[in-house]
Length: 260
Image 1 (tube, rainbow, N blue to C red):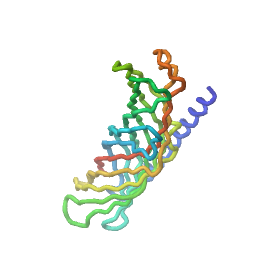
Image 2 (cartoon, one colour):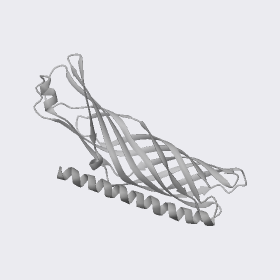
Image 3 (cartoon, one colour):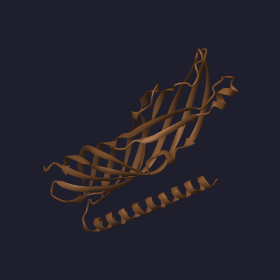
Image 4 (tube, helix red, strand yellow):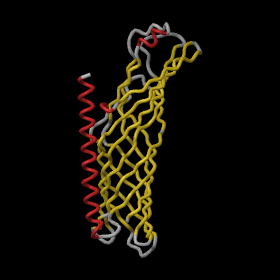
């Protein structure tokens, strides 16, 4: 109970810090907006997420499956040169992925197999700091290029664990969920690269962009399937089935931003 209380306190502090950063950036961007049009924008987008393994351990076979997510937040657009902009952003950002895992067994039983489909849903306060190059042409639509880094502050993580146990051709399902916030890196840095199109819309501007986020540090996940579950089915598994996966977050994101 004490450990859970400390985790709750840490999550509350992190959430409070996230709100403080969001408010500070909003106030800064709003101040700039009062001076220059098209400085503050609101964005919404779609994410296609994947977890890519660096070290899956001996005997573990993993098939990666992409999942869907959303992003929503505020975008700054600070002019440096006629063709170069500094673009800070702050956004709620979903990452994660799904993978099909063939798990090595601690006991050899003919006709006995365990296959797991894990879905990890991860939520972050994402703060990309980008340089944006806009092609210096007098067109109503301008091609753009984006690059930079992004800092992700973890908010929460959840695991859906779908286990399919096969015994001589018979299938027995096992399902559970788990809070995995503690397994995520508190700060996740990513390299960002992408591009898009800017459209002049009256006094404002509409920006459509696509970008890739490449996680630079692995998250170390551990999943436990308790031996007691198998023993209750009459399967003599002597120890818990434990497998560890070291995974990087990779995200392809498409978003639409309106700059006021």
